[in-house]
Length: 77
Image (spheres, rainbow, N blue to C red):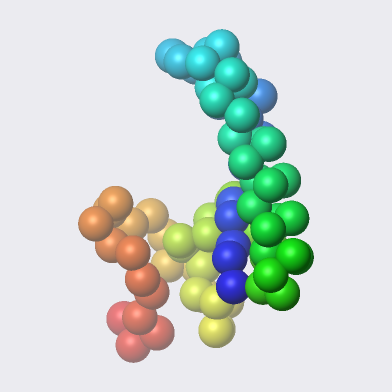
């Protein structure tokens, strides 16, 4: 299984790296990745980019902002 965040790169392109963000072909990479997954029989999905690391996938609890070093949610917090 492969999951990618559904990010709108046009919003990111307004920032510091502007044109370089759009030239990097992130959207094309996502399309190619989904095709390779389909071809090899693997599951591919795009997930909403809002609060992906803040909402527990099991119980739906919103845990708030986390530091970049925190990569997983523990339901016993």
